[in-house]
Image (cartoon, rainbow, N blue to C red):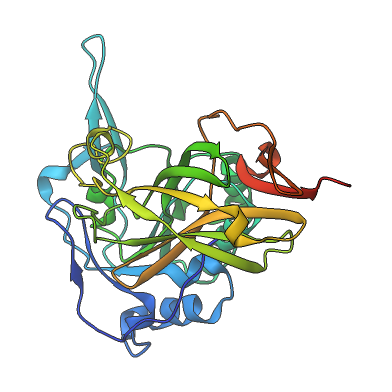
Length: 331
């Protein structure tokens, strides 16, 4: 689940640090750009939530030192690794200079993401000048590959399961579909309140100061309708910037952490089940993602406040999204 809220119109590219990318939001992109007219119109006309959060990238030229020739074809070297004296290269075939390249960084799960990718594949079928680079893995991977092959665009699709530094590739892209990285860390109870903590960041956009972003906990009902929200507190966490799967000493996510004592008596939620998600607002980009218990942290037992029972639920069928079920004691 993602959400975008209106923003001010600006046309210049926003600069991240030198290790990341420069960008502007799709809402700031005029459809009068001849080269990108069709794809910008496509993104803006579709209703899928992922297309509300597309960034146009200030595309860089590929450097010769990043190229290697294999069987007469040029490949872009993205990372180098090795073991037992071998050198293994992670790379992708260099697309044509005229190609328009779209990147997506995401865990491949969920109907909304599947719909977005399928729509891009069908657009690729119509326009052979489009390529889709996916950085990520997940249960949808095989389905995506089969669908691309059935539509005869498998040579325009590149899936790279993991890159420790994805920004090298993203800088050679024309557009990036943004997916925040987030997970729950702790849920504990104390009398009337529950402490909920975790992290959320937009890959490639730093949070080096406590004021870098604003974060809110969103409560939605079973139909996905907004019920209420709670503003979260930004917290310092040092390891995220250094971890190889996150900042990797390239990006600063020191204040990506959040924590908050949520007073459920004050929220006064009626009986029902509420699904939790986290909204991040940074640089006028608004992204919402489910609160995921991806590392199977312990979820507390039922807790009682006045005449109500509160039970946090770990929903495995929803990629481990956390919800809270509220019942009346007399039920």
